[in-house]
Length: 222
Image (cartoon, rainbow, N blue to C red; front, top):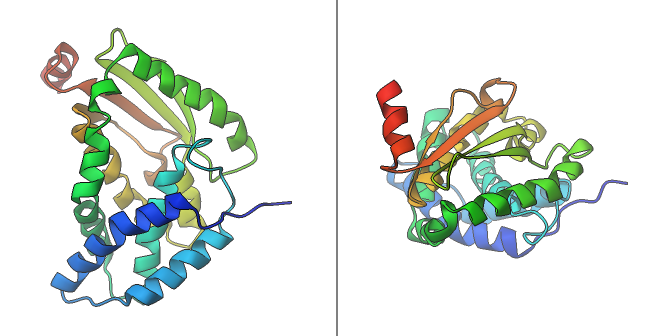
């Protein structure tokens, strides 16, 4: 029997962080969306989305919750938001002070061996759940040559499953911008050549510390 998500702290937090700047951006561009309607859709979307565990069990729940905020606002707009405008709304809301602050707090541990081990442990814990649950992420963490670089290959993406559920898969690539932005705020640089959202067989993340020898080497190869 499938269990569905409950409106938890994660959903409350992401609504608080993303809804206001998203709606403000749209309003400045002449698109007025009912906050009340968007919130109602958000709660309904949460209730029809399969459970993936709380933040303690699955840190990527925060990403799924964020995706639901953006798609709920899009659905509440009843076709008034063009796809490119949706993408701009996503990047604008991601750049809110609360989101930036939360990622900058991680900068101290983002490029450490312990940080890589923590990511690998998280993958080991959550990957088995992805076999029967498409809303889970499945990630392969590959240790770097030192603390200043590592790779993550995502073989399954919860946002892709959410987009499919809502009939809005074409919007998921716009949400991939959050990966580049979040890595930058943690003091790094993200390189990738393909994503699941754009039809790739997996998302290939190569992440290195900004201005490290690996960053300079990668830039010299481009």
